[in-house]
Length: 474
Image 1 (tube, helix red, strand yellow):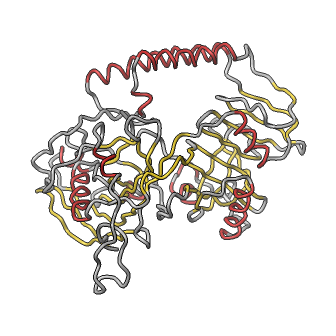
Image 2 (image 1 turned 45 degrees about the vertical axis):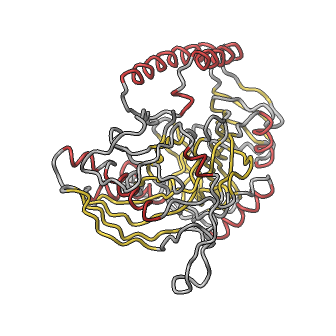
């Protein structure tokens, strides 16, 4: 479930959290971020003793941060972190916008990636089911409104979901009425010769001329397909398979080693994506993966290969190289929080010796232009203070401090990369330089620390204004 974040702007820090020398910048509804975006970094005055080549940003960012910081009587922050950043130091900020799928875009992708189908059987949402969904949505809106009125932080929503204006409610209600009017009374199967009318908001199974099934699920914000699947799709990585004891597989029914190397799989995938026009992405290391067909609570093995997560290349920022889990913050004390109102664009591809076999593409976006060719970043000493403050109010710190117990966080990796943030009074977004700060809680039980869900906990700090970037919207 998404997290509902209802944040109070410009709140003072509690006494146990160190306060920076400068006043915190509130980046929610004022013009601070836009003002800072207008400042272009000038070549730094870096002496030859520090660097053979001047770093073309406003400040010098080290390659490592080593420090032991006693935040208060119950919290120790251990920094022994590599800082991954661009080699040239140039930090552009691009403007983007949502680029939602329509039937034409879906057809172009699927017709380019998949063989010709002969029929489709869709688990189409019926009129009755859409009416039930509309009723449930109205109940949800009433619950959100109660939470907002009570000032209660809870599991998250984006900016659109927090918009409870009459105009938005009316527009969404009309959307549901359109779905009800268009839906059939009963689902069915029909003959097709292509993917020009992909059923939306439901799961479909196309049957190819060869008889192979292809599972497809699509709407305006996401596309998922997997060849060889009928009931559903589960891409299970080697790490997940080893950790999750529910999928013990002593006889090797759900797991086999890929028969293609990672390098060959990646090369094949990038050529195929370039062929269909998705060549503006960078792929990080692949993960060995089993593609499983999912029926209820039963999984059946389809094939093995490699899964790659791809990131749109916007200025050559380093890839994260590992996913991260945004941690909960103590909302009453979080400084200058800036809510990220759009879910991150996600492109994942499963590939083996037979080519691209499954693809998941969520929240697609398009590049609109350049907001700043080399934005001036926050001085790193101030960024360090912002990082310490955010860590001081994150989970699990709040959990242990409520129990009066001491806690130690160990920061082991920091990546200066981009995150998507909303532009003020606009439907556009900024691809903003941010510090993604990975940490471990040394006090968690080993089983929890090894859990992939907790393995890469992180906070995100806006590198331009120092605000804490959190999920959700406003």
